[in-house]
Amino acid sequence: METEPATPPKQEAVGSANELYHAICAAFPRAVANFNSKWNAAHPLCTSLASSNGAICQGEDEFITLRRLGPKIIPFVVFKLASDAADNLWAVFLYHTLEEDPAYRPSPDCDLQRQRRQIVELNYQRNKLAEERIRNWQTHCRENSMHSVILIYTSGDEYFDLLDMGPGIIAHLMVEYYHNQGDFYYELLHEIIHGRQTGAMEIQKPYQFHAWTLFFEDIDHDKAPKYRPNDWERQLSFWQDKDPDKD
Image (cartoon, rainbow, N blue to C red; front, side, top):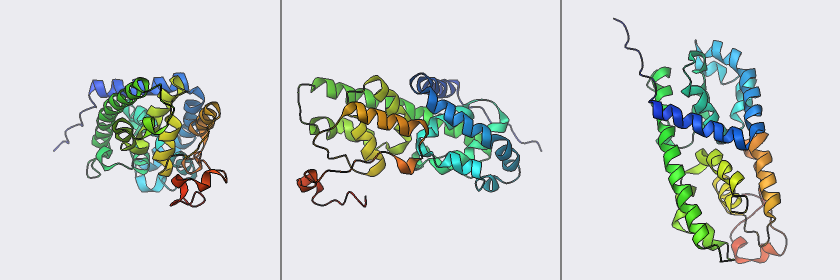
């Protein structure tokens, strides 16, 4: 009995993956080039190993190098899976090592083709939700732009809605950060990755954007920018129940 071929991802889901990928290309071409360089290094070996045992390729150095980049490369991986190239299916294994949110994980009981479809379509839903929530937060920030207190921008429902989406939207946020470098994306990114805001009393926004750009382009996830308070800031109430040297 022949197995029924898996249905490809919906066209709108493929289009969404392509659109986000090209938006990243336009804003951060070096990030895309670095990912593709690492992908090309891993591709021949992982393609051959994944066809027999996907678990084997996950132990290879080239695979580990990609995995260490963390969830920020999820849109790149989804873009690869959105293509109809059969030899990209090993990216399903890579995706599983990157995705932390169960809501966006495919069923591991399905074959790779069906998992591929699920991944592309689940990320289409994430892309739409992220776009809506980013728009809501930007509207909130614009409506309160006369305020100088940072908590006005980083403690409302619009901010927390994005925070709840977790590391899977790092790339989405970086694209918006590129276009809105005066906004507080560095605080949102910092809290998503480190579990807290910077707590900084004074911040140099151009420096923050530069630091987050370097991270996004080619720095491992566990080396993301982390703000260290100065001696004066450590005396403030924000830091009374926190140890910045351990978190």
